[in-house]
Figure 1 (cartoon, rainbow, N blue to C red):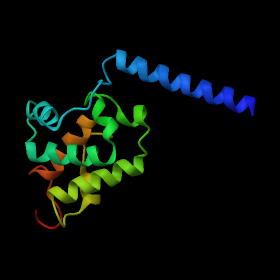
Figure 2: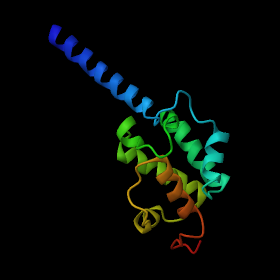
Figure 3: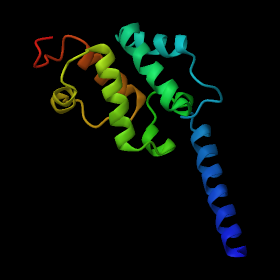
Figure 4: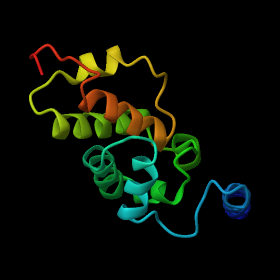
Length: 139
C-alpha cells in the first residue's frame, strides 16, 4: 500500500514537472485559445475561417485541453491523445467539410506528413476540405 502511494506521488510529480516545463517553453498557454484567436491565427496562414472553425469546434468538444497548446506544439505527446481518437476527429472534421466524400482517400493522399500538431491538423483540413483534394465522388 505504501509503495503504491509513493509511486503515485512520483507519477504526479513527473507529470507536474513536464507540464510546468512545457508551459515555461511557451507551448502551453494559461488559458484556452478563444475561437476568435484560433481563427485569426490560421487566417494569417491562409486558412479560411470555415475550415479552422470546424477544427476548433471538434477539438473543443473532444479535447479542450489541447486548445491550451501553441498550434505548433505536439498535442499527441503532451496530452496523450490516442492516434485512433485523432483519426476519429479527422474523420469528423472531413465529413463536415465534405459530406459523403471518401475520408480514407483523403487520409491516404495527404503528402504533408504525420499529423502531430493542431497546425498539421488544420493544414490537412484546409487541403482535404478545399480544392487540393479531389475525392472519388467528384467533389
